Image (cartoon, rainbow, N blue to C red; front, side, top):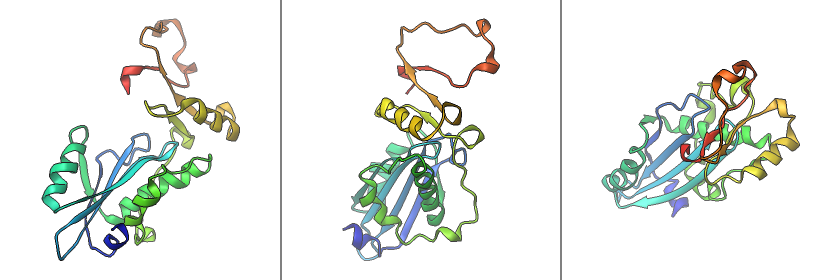
Length: 199
């Protein structure tokens, strides 16, 4: 079905409004519509351009555009504002995350291989927008989410880079004691620890 959908015209593409900041997770959505039946195939890609690349991806089909907007788009826009973008730009945002993460040995989510079919005919060279990657100073910045294997990821970064070449942010137990801001020099802080409920 996905192979067939690749021949359908692109209907619309979406990304979170703050996508230009590489520290923001990108929610990229690409849709294609069957001109004969109105059926819609959608691919969604959660992209971490600061470190991990494609963290999640999947494809889903809908009876028509109205069903897509009701069942998927409305759900995604509950927690963030999405804006429409060009198809080629959507594909380039995804590719930029993948290429950056590959430097550190991170591969796209296992479901990306299937969902990526909807991106196969994108013309990345047609996009003259530079897609920023990395955290501060262009260094990888790993922000541990609730489903990340933080120990494995940190170990992989440590194999590829020295401790000065990447940054990270890790959750800590809610009952952990935090240092007061007036007891240390802020210039010496390289990362911030957040409680579990921050993610």
